[in-house]
Image (cartoon, rainbow, N blue to C red; front, side, top):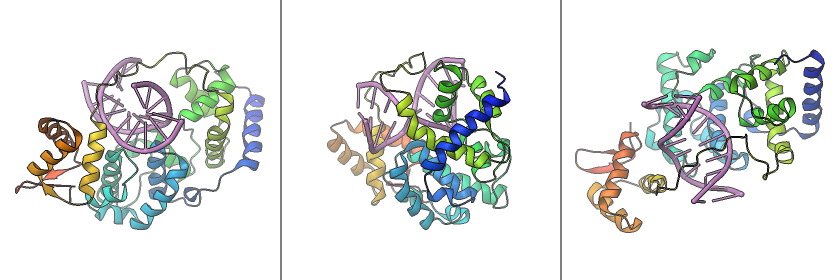
Length: 278
DNA sequence: TTCCAGTATT
DNA sequence: AATACTGGAA
């Protein structure tokens, strides 16, 4: 869909006028360091701003540079990550730091295709870095921005990703991509709830919700939590958690096996289970 | 129990 | 393109 110049400018004015009075001051908006911005984006993927704030400060204090993070062990990173959930993403973050040091001379790539090769960076996060760290005039679309566009340009009717992206591209004001996207983020988090009341049905198609099949995610988190405090004999550990969970030792062993495959725990030759030290 | 909002995988 | 994965909040 091709938008008229006026339509574009009117919408830009709507957003920027709103933003003047409602702008949030956030620590990751006071830096253009792609490493710090990456940390904030990964945290914000999974957690609300209020809970990210203290953890972000802690993380950049403990690992101030990409080099510091690359030198840390997975165990170090997982301990700082405590309380954030999505532990695998903490490992991605560390592996990305290692790759930046080893494969990119310590500097983050500035093109999307290269950023996308880093573990845990999909299209959204890659573009967030290009916009927020390098101020490139490209568009980025997260679910908030998608909903804003859906509401203002398609009367609330869901559109294919490519159509949303096409509109998003036209809306980016030249030379103001950084401010534009920050403004949209704030606008979305504040105004979308008013536009999109909870009773309105989502985007037309209902997502096939997975029936609750006693997923293991709760137990995975518990295992990692326990290992943050120390290491244990695997056999005893398995039996102890088995009792604690009210599950069979085989079940716990299965959880541990998958955590091992995910690189979240390791078991030494002598049968000690711990967070990976490298 | 479901939802959220991304990435990875098939 | 569709599905799985993730874990705290709602």
